Image 1 (cartoon, helix red, strand yellow):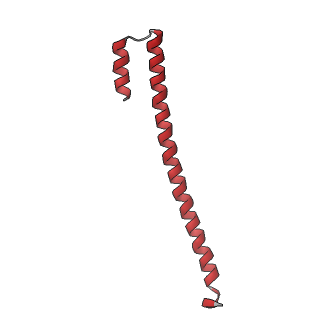
Image 2 (image 1 turned 120 degrees about the horizontal axis):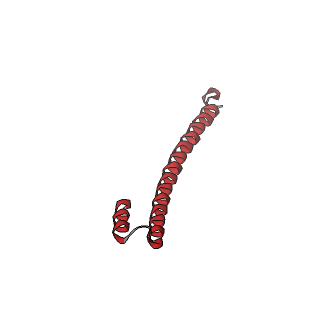
Image 3 (image 1 turned 30 degrees about the vertical axis):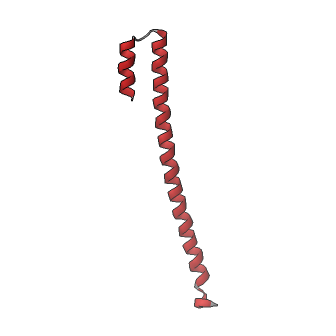
Length: 72
């Protein structure tokens, strides 16, 4: 055996740390993309509700334009 038997245990341990590091990076990337997607959905929902209120006549054109500009 090479290295008095330390080669395989060290290799397995290093691979374990590598897998753990990749899992942490993957989780961070998933969380970042999920957060961005959620924020965009919220803004689209707000614009849709605003357009519906304008269509029902609850707010006038000036109020609609002012609130739409605030959402941008």
